[in-house]
Image 1 (cartoon, rainbow, N blue to C red):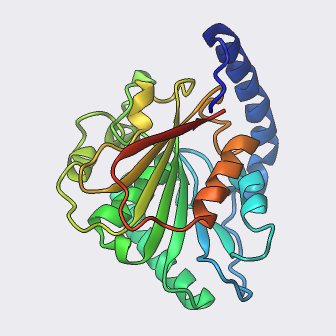
Image 2: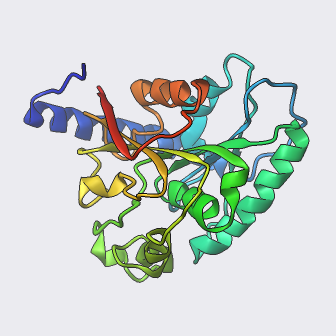
Length: 256
């Protein structure tokens, strides 16, 4: 059973948590500017995980999540910094395709898992759904990703990436097209306290052809999604558990 705080109290706590997370992330941000050095991957029994950050961000946002996912030594975890000069997420999705192939070769694993925060989740989904990545990606987890487009921050429309995240964009129209046989399990975490998603439900995956689950979290804002202990634990359970043979587009129990 999910625990929901009264709206006013939960909203206040979520806002305060966003401020704390933002402060910590600003301190860590310089450490994640450079692309991490690719190291030899030790033997692992689970598929490797590639982490994809959001708009104007970098791999430092995943410090806690990365540590948790790799804690038991059963999976190799890496973070991918795409170019800060990216103007088209479709180009970045093609770069991601090459990185996935390279990661598979180094780890000896047939398939990988992707975890994307915000725009990173949309890049991962485009690769899976439009570039044939579903044959190589076992599970795609998205955290606060504008699958249906967001209307937040209209003053940023000048940036082409932001325009691609708007409802009705060409990219979102492509993702709405039929995707029969897409083999990747998609799990979207979303929150009503995510102020970057407008409306909040925009972070849900709504597509009849995708093996999709939507997991609602409560009391957590956009910046805290990749750093909150409850979400981190839920993401780890998602990647640890068996993949259902078929998953209808459903809403799972909320994460409190």
